[in-house]
Length: 267
Image (tube, rainbow, N blue to C red; front, side):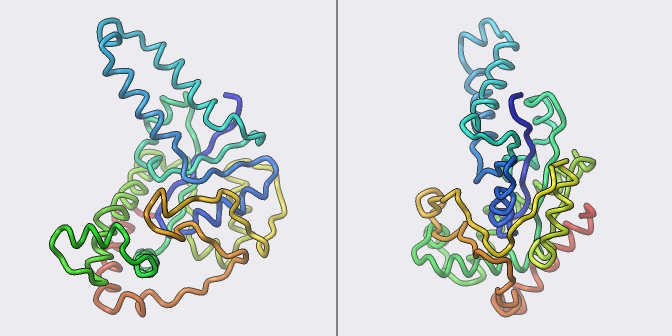
């Protein structure tokens, strides 16, 4: 491997974009936007195994060599020696990653309380009228309400991310660092120090009052929701109480869901 790889994964609306922006202040690190690497590796394996020529004469070394080339080629254009590859799918693929990379890769998982995650999604959906989630709700014959919006987001995406974190805890608990959103916002210096220690990075002084996202994600084209990766240049918690945004019933519902996951799997 020409570069040292680590993974960044976790829950949505939990600070992964601001964390990558801070980490990218480190001169030796490139923390990626949502990375296509995992999906490319999976697609490559599927295409290779389905080919008639391969079925006739499978040579596993070919797949290994192609996989190695894909991994080294994906971020070869970056000068930084350390790549922190961000993809929420890594959590469910930690055993496979050992095969793909031929080593155990450490992973940083950013998490946040579930009511705050769902409140953040609800605010984002309301700021994007005609978004694809609303259209999906309507196409399924339901009325667009706060409840149908957050339940669609939970069932469509957030639940899978929770399952991904719990799977990673079970499969690779000894190489996971869980970062709580509130710790990142309230205690950024100690949080970044813990990441540096975990990933064995050289120490760096980060500017928490001048945070810039240089990845320029085209959220509207890619995800259908403008502003998904917009961040403030200064760390501060300014959002309303999730209970105010969601209302009491939804707030309690998601608190119960969160307790069932975190209590069962201990993270």
